[in-house]
Image (cartoon, rainbow, N blue to C red; front, side, top):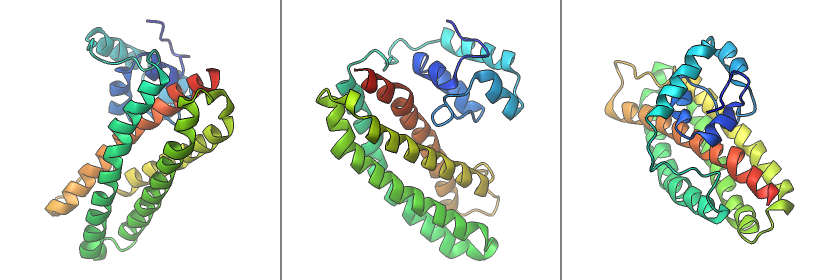
Length: 223
């Protein structure tokens, strides 16, 4: 296992999928921020790089052999996985979260008249962007890759990566607005469910974007 302080976060996540558990634990962005070395990321978050490396090694020693190493699977299989594990669930989850967000903001707006409206606005913007983004991948980019034209897809891939960065910024803002998804004592059941749902959305999108930015796109361009 060749992981050192200068290893790029995205590379570690691509070569050792279980390391993403450690990254998620410490709030390390391994999708949009995947190009940064571990030492730089740790310095920015106030983490001990040596301790983080030890934690990653510990996680990998208990590796689940059923974990798929997507940097070795056929691109068509990887795309099928992305569609089934991420696109399909998102199409169901995004409207559900919207309904809860509208309800919570409508009922509790007076508790924080600045934060709640912004939270709803940021979420609705993210939802619209993700829906358009998935449509473009499914209708344009993914068919190009499956047909063997991935090396010609630098333009669409560049657009997708830019949109991933935008989604990452929205996720960051949602985390800020919810105080890290810490559920207030006065929160009703819908409020609690919304916070948990947004936290799960963040985790899923990080994995989703990681698979595309760090594995699918580079492999497609080299195909």
